[in-house]
Image (cartoon, rainbow, N blue to C red; front, side, top):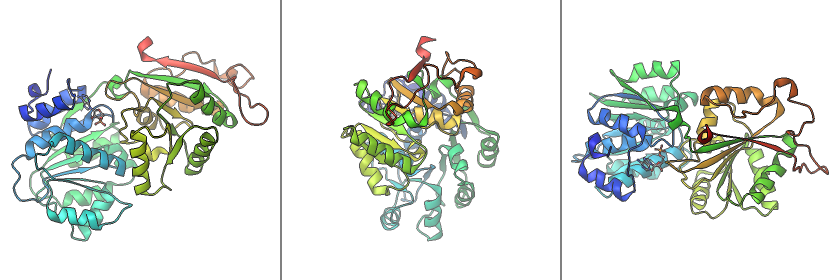
Length: 404
Ligand code: AMP
């Protein structure tokens, strides 16, 4: 199957060929014909599945023949990082066709965004809070928007954006095509879908696509005090850990881990809510260029981050939800590449592991002993040595779908 068979023009297919997009991904195969046909869509698809192209390509095709420069397409996303990535994908795919996109998000000045919107644009990619502020200030006119994308809808709901999304949608007049993408389809997401979509086609991709089978998952049973030493040891021992994304719970911990790594001569930087937007973008650019090997992040970076070269994701702290686990590990093993996800699990976190297993549908640790053996001083438990938390006695369990 190729992209023209899905209903895309030869012109767009030629651009894709240059970008080395040979085969459409599953979400692209299922969603593109529906969108080209003008139908509303409710799609469950994860970052990493190729979902951005699945909606951006038919939108770009639809937008050709620009008239007055009032925006005709609006893409709402939960985070700044995702907004920037979606915009850059629109620009890549439209390949100097003259289509104008603007990206609008909070944490940065209004002036430039206002200027770009007033100059005239075809596509706005925005986080709901900031776009709503612009509407209130009279900077954004959505009356001509006839294509609306709600990307990572579940995340937008989790972040409390529903009131702003409603107010933004109220600004649109006339008929519109609405495309909703969500990693999970909960009852709330379904309710929102019935509010914003008209007679939608539902599209689902395989779980194996959501959680790419190319990702090898490993579990390390370790106590809190031993995590730093284990991380340092793993990175030093495994030369293939050259581009690592470490997830931790809090901003303070992220800083602490980064410092600890640097003390051990491992190049590392941090990204979280205490770091300014412009600094975060600079850090991400440096990471993409491979200027340092470990990026320590809180969940703010979990969504939308598109760094194809990530070799390893480390869950230094397990996420609070299974959905976040899937989002996090989706940063590696993207678009056909292989990747490794390592998780540090403390003895009191078995319940989180079980939640994750329910969502991913496979055991994280197939060799785990029964509950009663969880705490003894067995070989699977790391113990600090010499008071510095270092230990070589951690244990590792691997689970790879490739072996099943
Ligand atoms: P997304 O799920 O939209 O975040 O896309 C993940 C990554 O896969 C991005 O870097 C895309 O450029 C890339 N990608 C999307 N579709 C394809 C495809 N058909 N072939 C190769 N790479 C793709």
